[in-house]
Image (tube, rainbow, N blue to C red; front, side):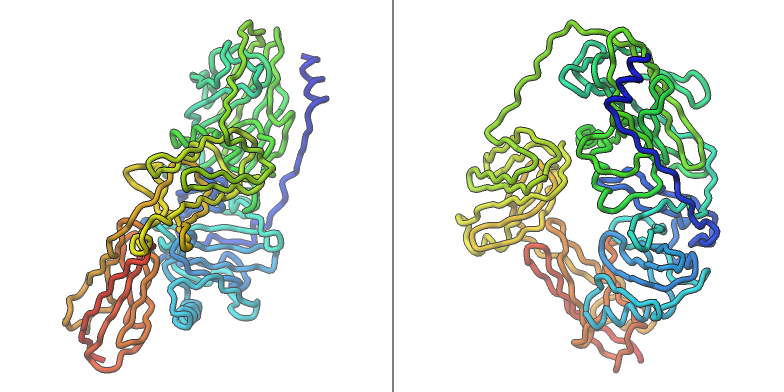
Length: 565
């Protein structure tokens, strides 16, 4: 045991950070209903950590959203994707609150935003930055209404708190939001990993999925395993809150070896620049294959996350022959409910001789260098540090399909994929696009930039790509009235638009030749105009709409309607 402790002290580094005190009493709940959560801060999402709390709105839209504290509206944005309609309020205590997926903004704010939309003749506004004296707000003032904008999301309020100076996101639980939670995290799976060529686990060189059983309340154990050399663990775990079936993220993950803490991370705060390293925190290969997330209790060399409170030897456990190790992994939620998993390990010298196969191809990647490869009219260019470590890339082009390794490696940066299209006619080029076909049943449009004889795209996904042709126009049809109909009692116009292959790129609508704001509901595939936005002169009116898809196919609709002034 003394030898183990001496080894750890000599060859490891430690960092211990105290949790900052936050002004919990300064902020109120942004809704006036009892908070139930669909998502918690720091949950493991695709390529990022969840940056706030997803507060349920009883499956409704239009609930009052209140300013959490005194301050001023510092930023507004309306977008089809991401946060949808979002409002930022900066407070004098050094923090900024964020309210996202809104259906509309509060009095005064809504009119201000619409004036910008009409000026730009665009539903999407981009970032609107405001000064402190433009839209001041008071704690408890209605600043917006809850919704489901920003893609295919259910009604809820996404709520964040950020440090105004650093823009780091902080767990809103630390600012006084309380939810009932007496339920300990639930462990669903456990991997043990060999972390060196010389490592062995139960005489094997492969990672192993370990079974476990209950030995008490929220306490589990595995059978004893044998090992040699550096090993690590990965845990599939989630938390649940009282009154909710959602599988939420945990707050803290800790590992002890023979009573000594060797790993501990806490989801207190992180920066947006760090968020992509979630792909190194999880077993990314397993996630890419099976869509479940195992959190590692060891830190990869390229991982720049700052969520770690304690690290000894980066969480690597160096198993020595003849020694016994008692490993404990503790998963905790914010309210302190804990679940413990115990893993007994015996150090056993392996007689198995194993030499890893040399996996070589003609395309060697050195992570710190730029690489460009070309084959059969397809080229791929990787900037420096696209990958977190070096390896041999699989790359071939057959039957017009570019096979670029497997989509089981996380990328730090986007790379450029280019197709030679000189063999196609000008008419054919108009409808061609680059598609990701990792899912053969549902090809995915890649944002395709076109030059005379080359098409290219940038992506952070590996796998299979090809050129496809989209010859279908978008579809447009009236939903809540017919051509030539009186609509005096209607409060709005609803038009369905869709494009099944490459998706809608843009749309434009006018009444009597003047641009109108039609809000795009992605889930319902419809655009909506509110008559209250603009006074119409006369009773007969002409509605004209043009819709364009992502390869340039367009469709138009013209319809007459009648409405009394």
